[in-house]
Length: 115
Image (cartoon, rainbow, N blue to C red):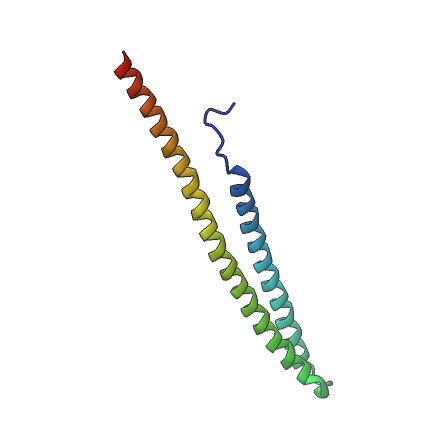
């Protein structure tokens, strides 16, 4: 049983929350891929019998750093955009509440004047 009315923009608010969670999952995916590349690169560099493919280990380490940087950059960028949208939706919800309260106050004042 709901005691409070649901805001008009509930779907948008929930969509933002889902997008935030997806953004976090994507960052964790970038971190996981970066760690795999780090482990692979270190593993290739540790091989003594394959000196001619050490360049592949260095490439894996470089790509590891690039993956991590891109993941963090994308996370921060989308987080800032979501924060702006969240503020917009939150202000809309607040303004609706303020308008509703003002309307009910005006109605009650009119009823008092008429009585």
